[in-house]
Length: 111
Image (cartoon, rainbow, N blue to C red; front, side, top):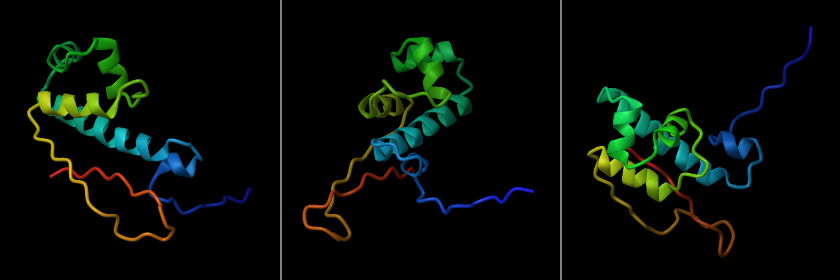
């Protein structure tokens, strides 16, 4: 029997895997998931979604399967708008700063 080591997640699987662009990947994953949910809820085929989103069908297919490298956050926000969603971007001071000049964070919240 082998021992299994369990590590507590940071809440960002991309950071846990040590990816340099972990924050961006998490944001894009959440956006892609929401786009996928809406496409399914509206019973759109990938071709219909591609026409509505103004994207090639293969690119839509990749995004809906979680392969969203090469698709910008801006394009994903545009897709959500084309799917009938309002987008609000709120910029505010970071909650806390542990180090002077530390970067804030990007969070995606769906209402």
